[in-house]
Image (tube, rainbow, N blue to C red):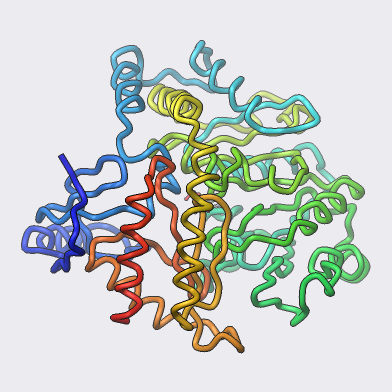
Length: 442
Ligand SMILES: Cc1ncc(COP(=O)(O)O)c(C=O)c1O
């Protein structure tokens, strides 16, 4: 039904039909995070058609629909499951489907201990479960540690750890008390103004050498929440030593290490989980977004000894509903059959090389970073100071939309690229061509 076709178009968005829908939604839907007036009619693979017939190449939805929009096998599995059963109270009853999905998730998460799974509906809910499980099992430990730039969700517990934009926190105080934030390992704009590797990874060691001596009693900390690659904060890849050092500190002080893979997980970085790039394992892993190819399904995979030890301490209603389970199972099948993790690694290499070529030609591109098909381009006012240029980034983004490429911003001044893992080289070439044109025009 949908095809990309050269030459690069220039759309007038929203079109007449789109304007009507935008007005209707604006009147009834609460203020969220709208980025562009693209009004979707249907989507398939990497392509999105709007209600006025414009066709976009979507380099945003791989974050969630990593198997591509409406992958036929996922759609079929959902339809079949809808005939079988849509809902049984999965936290209360049992099903072979739930047993299978939980078993596969346990196998998917590397770890030294046996694991258990809490099924839920969103990344924030997965992180809430991690907060509660670690607290339930370490009742004398009431503190949490997270990082500046982090995004762990928007419900009040997870929001207490989220720290990537002031708007996420302003007016919501008081947050959960005793959540401590440290700067993340942001080498491109080091918060300590140091340079890797001469810094000796001070941004990790400072936790033990300063915070644990002057601010945070370590034996009061239940968990440390870490994004292995910071997502909303700017697709920031920490240096290889950082995750292992934080992991080691957590182990030595009996603190649960929570690996938030909601954004970076499920193959995007060229490994099933992004933590695998760092050679360590976690006590608790939050999965979401791409786990259901677009269907709301998330999970907390935790060491069995972090399980809630009492019926009713934690549960929900929709976790493990039929559609979610069928979508997760089909997603895992498709990822295996189409070798999407390997594909992300291979095509990611091709893609980042093309973005680096662009960087050579445009001084406005300060940094190109990421792993696999989780990539970002960071715009600066000048390369020496690395001063973020969000206004330029926003102009580029707008031009990309007008020319038929869907992207999302992240961090102070970056654009992120998260195409579905079924993307091909022609689509990557096309995206880079549009980006190049957008940069020229901006
Ligand atoms: C790393 C990370 N954790 C948690 C969340 C929250 O997920 P959800 O929006 O499904 O609640 C997000 C969402 O962007 C995320 O990127």
